[in-house]
Image (cartoon, rainbow, N blue to C red; front, side):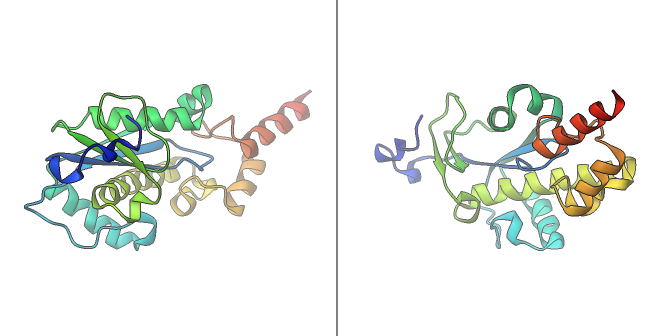
Length: 207
């Protein structure tokens, strides 16, 4: 369904509205993670907003509250190998679809952050800046970010040179310098330009 479907329906008529968001599209390393959340109107959660605008400790507190109070929540990820194979947009849409499919409660409407919708069976709409405007999407943003951050912190223990505990895979100066010095890891996205450049340089150097 396209994002115009609410011209025909009122959001108030739906009982199980899922919010969907993703984290990690612009990273050079690690997966893209999508989350889907159906909130419980009988158990409201205060302070939901775009996860990027929340302090880390507040994100963690809200993530635990969402998991405890939501009617349903789920996450799905697509790793670097999938991103490199089908591109980051298609990997993101696939993760979003999988996250909704994993919900333990069937949604009757889905609201997605951004301007693109996956191809799926649900009535849905895409909302630009939805992660700061729609509580369900804000909740999904928080779940996705805390899940992905936790994974990247674990990867920092395995690959300590890259500063993943701080940059969570984004292309910071420290990260780029480490890439050039140590080369890419198995969790780097080989089709992203800064990583491709390092791979090409290493290949040329070895000839």
